[in-house]
Amino acid sequence: MAVQVKIPTIMRKHADGNAKVEAEGATLEDVLIDLEAKYPGITKNVRSDDGGLHRFINIYVNDEDVRYLGSLEAKVGEGDTISILPAVAGGWADRSR
Amino acid sequence: MSDFNEEQVVRYARHIILPGIGGAGQRKLLDAKVLVIGAGGLGSPVAMYLAAAGVGKIGILDFDKVDLTNLQRQIIHTTGDVGRSKVESAAETLQDINPGVEVTPYDTILSSQNASEVIEPWDVVVDGTDNFPVRYLVNDVTQWLGRPLVYGSIYQWEGQNTVFLPGKEAPCYRCLYPEPPPPGTVPSCAEGGVFGVLPGIVGSIQATEAIKLILGVGEPLVGRLLLFDAMAMDFTTVKVKWDPECPVCGKSPTITEPIDYDQFCGLVPGQAPPEAEHGVPTTVGR
Image 1: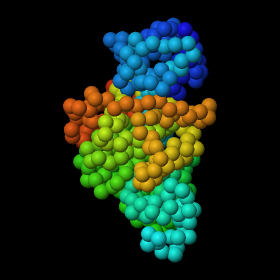
Image 2 (image 1 turned 60 degrees about the vertical axis):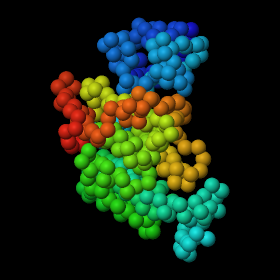
Image 3 (image 1 turned 90 degrees about the vertical axis):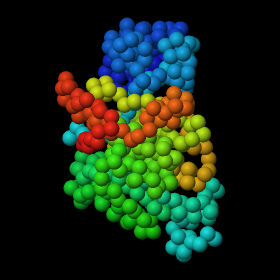
Image 4 (image 1 turned 180 degrees about the vertical axis):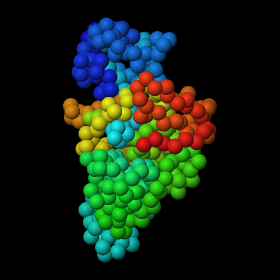
């Protein structure tokens, strides 16, 4: 099943700069595996060492947090939008000076 | 009509005739006390719109000085303010916008030592901070004190807004992200950059939500995280649920005292990050 995956700004360097990419899968885990195959390194900061999901990155299937849909086992359907949302502090540019 | 003086009747005329505010609503604004944490990109439009709206008492907290690099987005400061204390510069602008507003500047760093004392006197808190340590501190303390927290954050071309309303099984920031990201997992500061108008949009949404909370009108942005992408010009909303396991607002809280997380942004890539220790006062980095 084809889904749209919205890539946050900080991860776009792993996705050839794309804000949205397509991936395949019936569950979130399938989608992440497919994403990693297409864009190596993209899920490095999404998945923890034990294979689960980091708590400082949230993933949504449409507008639902996957934590309440079974996390990696969350079912995804044709045309769903997956959003990856890392914690953002904002204003970091201030410190680059 | 709610004891307005002549100047106020004219100044707030467009609010007083507005369905949803009216004379009674304007009186609520004049009696309200809002604390704006940060006099930067987000704090600028928030504080300016709150002052213009006649929010009677506005607190503004920042420890920094105005820098030339700030002026591309921090519209509360002007070129002549470079080098001045941000809160001093901000307070002056707010008084220029509306001399009827009482401004309390806090030229300080928010820490576990002072957060409760600073936040306690205010009705509503607006988070315009730019770093995780203060974000978590503000979240935790507003939850404990029962103060609504109007959240906004920005990164490059994207912004986020939500409102955390303590109690009633509504989510807090830790329901969304229980702990700050470990050092090394967030982009280095040099990768930052921010579109100058972005905090204007996100901050204006924060000001809107703060005013709605004061008035008690409309649907507050509670339990919903608004995501704005300026490049795509797209607003989307995702659900934020109260987490019964939340370390601060859950059924069995494990965090009950303010924490000073170490500031880790600004590290040179590859350099070992400082150990984040709980309960040890640290300064917030620039």
